[in-house]
Length: 267
Image (cartoon, rainbow, N blue to C red; front, side, top):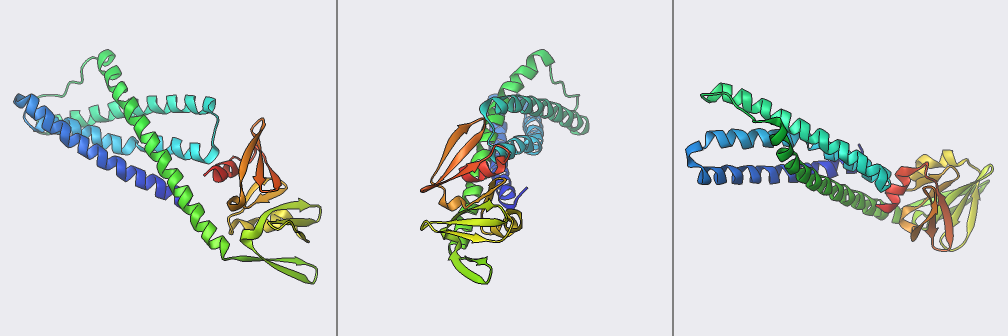
């Protein structure tokens, strides 16, 4: 994962841990109040085991959220992924807390732990897990989007102060990076499209420029185009997953073969 993705996932996971811990404590106190005969130890084992497993399997909605923000898939691709993920989430949750409770009961309780009939208990747990998975997915997605926006803002600040030297033979034209709308391949040259309408040629392949321009925030949107995300004014669907990128009076293509570029421009 990139640095901003790790930051987004870590921030969301910490928030989830805080929520889980608070819910666990409230549930123990509620059970103790409503059923004092159970004491404190048994409810504490139930809630702690569920919370510990949840903290681990929270990585499942995190992985789906990272995939969603990276690729920006259509809804019909997202739905089956979420369905498979929530089933896996619930199965691991139930299997994990049952195993932990059995071990805890063997260690500190007088009798064994009994989960109950799987036909009734699992659907009950699944409904709760469905809500938990949905909430976790939203938290991770929003946190990742926030990290992407923060990274874009930092890149924009750095780019605004940077300049780039366009060399055409012995001639050098120094332009602010923020004034470069896009760079496109033009045979043996790369053509720089500037915000003031000028077009400057530099004898270089687009691939040779890509790494250096990526350091200024430019993204590859097509085999023949690099685009400055800070100058994008709109995205227009062209069908079959392709888009037209609006850069003021200039338009650049966005191929469906570059899903990460779409995610970056949307972020």
